[in-house]
Length: 469
Length: 171
Image (cartoon, rainbow over all chains, first blue to last red; front, side, top):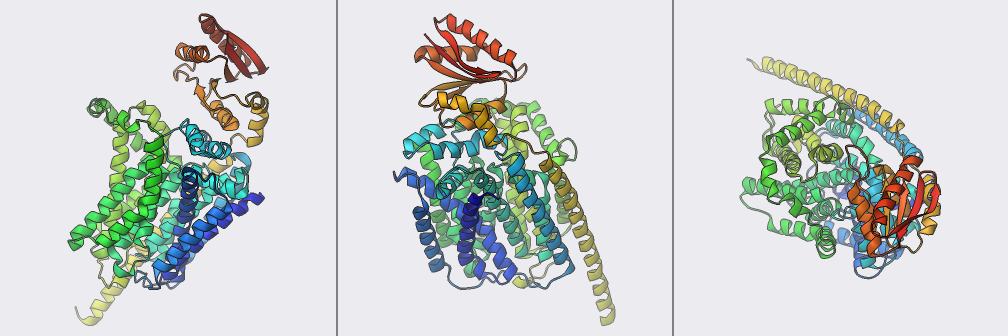
């Protein structure tokens, strides 16, 4: 193994340690505590490193070294331990006893972990530079950044050359690890995929296990991780899997904000931090974060008739680093006019073209139904459709039902947004569909799997509610 | 129903739900195994360039471009373009991609004009070439030379190894 792998391992470990301080130690059961730490740790680590690198360059301090990152970790860790308190979350499953479904779930999960590790070593040997999107955009921009020197205008002058409108979470995370290692390392680039695979697996378990049997949470996690497109993307070194992970993590935090009351296990400011990271990851993240905030704020408003203003202000405060970095990068230094291209007068003629509606619908159907693209998704969308049918005929009142419904509504709105993007795209439609639809659907799949899993297997005994089974 | 009948009914309903849940979970895990098989097959077929191979391919060109701030790139393949750009970053500070017509993969006259325009505005312009065949390379040099000649510019092949090379377009 490449010795530079020590960097992503240490960074990930430090992130999980910080997440344990704020989330893990407050969970009612050990599995939930471990899942909570692994769920939020990768995002905390990725966000601190990427944003730390960016702001360091913006402030004229050059590319940060080990000392800068340790300072960030100390500041972040101190904030966490001061703010988190010691109350344990009241949100926990009432039946942590081992059962056959849990045992089977762990066996399947362990097998998947072995498969992912094999894929990691294989990728390192056979395709270390990742997909062509990684070579052309994400890793390429990290190389430009790292090789370019110290000054922000110089770095920005290079970054605008390749997809200038794309934000910098992933390149920043790679660059910061290069700086910690003291040189370029392809092993570090490939291993950066670990952050988001581990995070996605853990947050899927964490999101479902708090409201359903652990066996159902393991099944949801296994279904998601076994999906060929998720598996493939884990080693493609692109930003879609990170966005999928951050979106689900932010949704978990917002759920806590709305139903957790005084016993929240994810602080509102940390939820905001993840929303900001969504914006800092990809352009879709900006829209997804607004959709999540709108859905959960609406839910809070209709269920309680008021908003927890203090909590929502903390969310806004937490989102500042990611949003500010994006604003500085995109609007102060880079003018791409990409939104103007989408929203010009031609928008109406595109929307009025029935052939475009048909083409987009056909492309979505080809992805979702078994057929030419079936191998990308295996049987995952079929399982999701089956769970949706079960959901439709099964009543699920109370808090758990509303949580599942909010995840489901967010998933639906993401889906509508993706569909609309293709309707109005100024790019050649077929080319745009062929090169991006599988990645956009990947971004929204996890929240759909979690919604269906909570709805079908949700159990609110800990909430003292009676469910119709 | 008396109390015993109610308990019996409740117990059999719970048992039914248990069996349905068990069957659903086994079905999901079955799908997971099929999914994983497909994913592993994907992984087995992974293939792509390695950093060392890119270094070998573009190493000589990289040395010649040291300090050069404006470079164009010509290829008949997006993948080759990305590989070269990856290997040469950030030696190439301002790179133009010769966009190919998707339908026939031929080089458009407009882009040849664009290179000539660039060369005319600030000569000499270096052009990194990476084509799929030696014939394509030669065709490109001939076509570019014709367009450049109309502007009084000359195309010089400063380095060539098969289908990869470096041009200088200037006065």
